[in-house]
Each structure stands twice: as C-alpha cells, then as structure tokens.
Length: 523
Image (cartoon, rainbow, N blue to C red; front, side, top):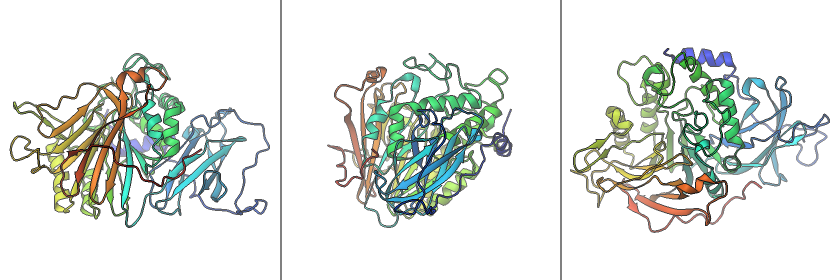
C-alpha cells in the first residue's frame, strides 16, 4: 500500500503526534519566589517513582536564539497527564536562573515533553532541569548556535547505534568532549530487529521486531535508558536525521514497502511508517512543523551552513514522481534554495548514505547510494558551484566504516590525488557507534585516502576560516562486546584536513587542538 504525505499526516493527526509544542518558555513572576522573581518548584502530593526521569534529558535543533529541551516522565498512572516544571540557568548550580515555567505531558505523546526555549543569546551555554511528581531530573547542558562573525566551531558526528550489537562505549567517550558545540547523528539511531537477528550481545525490548507504536516507543525507551547515550544527550544539543532502521531496513521507492516488511504479515506498511515517525518525533529533540519532513538548515554564524537532508523521504512516501530522485522534487527545490543563499565559506551537507562511488583502476565500480541517482548528486554540486561556495563537505553515516574521500567524477583521469586537482568536494564517513563493521580496502581507489570498519568510533569536525579538520576517535571492534570500557580508553585513529578553497584532503599529523576555554559540563 502506497502512502501519500497527506495520508500520512492524517494518520499522524489521528495518533496525536501533531499536537503543538508547549508554549514558548518565558520568565514569569511568583511573588513567593525569592531572589530572581521566578517561580520555584513545590510538590505536596505522594512522591512519584524513583525513576520518574529514567530517560534523562536532551536538547536539540539549536538556533542562535532558541533550542528544543526534552525529557520524559515515567508515571505510575499511564492515563493521567503530568505537570512538568522546567528551569533554565546560566550556571550548572542554578544560582543564576534565566527562566522557569510549567508544562504538561501525558499519554498522547508517550509522556515525552519538548519545549522550544526561545529568546536566548547566541553562542551561549545554558543549563536546564525538569521536575515532576516530586522528583527532579539530571541537569542538562545545551548551547545555542553562534551568530555573526565566528572563528571556529567543533561538531561531533556519529551514526549506527545498534543496541543488540554491543555496548555504547563510543557515546561515553563522545560525552567527555565538553568542547563540542553540538552533536550530529546521521541515522540508524536505533534498529528495528528482535533478539538474535542483527546482534546478540544485549537483549532487545521488546524481544521481537518492532511494528506498532507501543513497540517503537518501548525500543526508544530501552535505548534512552542506556547510561552512555543518556550522558551524550545530557551534555550537548543534538541535530538528528533518520536513515532506514528508524523505520525498517531498506524502504522501497514511493512508499511501496521495505526489504524488511511483508505486507499483511508485519502489518500495513503505511501504518508502520506513521507510528515510526510519531515515535521519532516524540523521543528526539527535533524542531519541525511537520514530523514527516525532517530536512532543515542550520547556520553556524558566518562560518558554516549546515543543511540536513532526508534521503528516505522519496522512499517511505508516495510522492507520485515517475522518475525517482535522491531527495524528491520538493526537497531538491528546498536544497537548491539553501545552497543558493549560502554566504558562509563552508557548506557542510549532513546526510545518511554514501555520496562517492568507489571507482577502481580495473574499471569495476561500487555505486554509492547517491550514485544510483547521479543527476541528484550532480544537481547538488552544480548548485554549490553556481553559488561560488569555495568549500563543499559531505558528512555520511550508514556504512559502518570511517572514510576520507575526495569527490571527483574522474578519479583515474583528470583528477590528481597529490594536489586534489579535479576534486569538487570532500566526504567524511563517521563509522559506527556499535553496529558491526568490515574491512576498508582503499588500495585501488585513487581518491579514497582511508577507510576503517573494524573500529567503533565517532568523528570530530573542527572548522576555522583557513581549514577544516576531521578527526576520528575510537577503539577496537571487540571491545564493544563487554560492558566494561576498553582498557586504555579510546585513541586518535586518523585525521585529515582540507584547506579553504582546496576541496582536497591531506593527512593530519595530530588531532586538532581543542579550545582552551570550555564551558563547565553538566554536573
């Protein structure tokens, strides 16, 4: 059964996923509150469960003046709404509170709460916490995007976190990098399989493949109780985009189903898409007007423009397009406009799957996901060239490998791997948090400088006016199989730089030096 976007919105509306965000956070007075004139939290009823905030806190989709703040309340009464008190401060001790207000969550959103905190200052770190049922959440730390002139930004990049395939030590190490401005997750935030299907290290909740809204909610709940993932969410604002496993493996074009979905056996595909989107909208701190449309753009001051694109959009929806494309007509038009209006020197495209084909000297080619739609890929590069953007960077998840690549359409002809002449962009794959990897042979690929699929890792992107450096940090694959962290911790695995205007990678001799002044982590 095909699913048009209109039909999807009707289904989501019926499930309550289109409920508006709570009111904009604002300071409000309370004549009984001391000091700052803001209300304080009081509770005179029976205490809620000790694990009322067992899923922690999170923030996401930061702007220069706003950020989404998230939590979930675990209540003893699954049918009653819950009042939740939110505080934002300029310091981790909450001695300098900025705002406080009460919101309501309940069964319609699975007791998840998303608040759009606005009227904030650009490039500023804030701390926040929630209270409900007499309990208080862990403190979270978030940060708004910079505005105007910016000298440097640092972004963590990750993907492919399979709970069943291993422990999330990678998230633990990522959470310790308190100098990051934000974290990008490029898809496969969770996996839909049941026990012993794609990993047997940890049991899944539910133990079967997830198909219904209750199933998807339960799987997100399990992931978010993982302490390492919870800590990474607590310390940074995240920007996320889905790949396929947030739905199910390999959706087919035009909303016709998926490789891992048998119509009538695993339910109606259109229903499964709708509940998968609703659960994602509930559990991830995204700012979207339409939960089915996840593409959006972020500006990191005058240094980086960051479009986030959804390559699954033409697959899970019936767009009615006779000629398939990588993004669909509406998203392509949006991206054309975002690129055309880019004034920053660095255009960084965040998305889920491979951009560059593997073209070997013997003439054999492994076609990338974008390579299956070469006119779509060409359209992106031509738009950047027409806008005279000097630096094009593609960030990729999905492959379970870390890769460093110069993008060129003629790697064995006009392209020169020594100078980068003939290259139009650079591409970085982030590797996997825990999903299984494989060998990364680059010997016969002129424009592929490095690949590693046997380490679990994340990527740190360090951007200045003069250069961009990508550094991979991680540890051996086997270390994810046990709950204790690897002996010796993580290591710097590799780094590559591209000078401004070069669109060409050069191997780094050391990781980029972190900034000296780092905001205090959430305690």
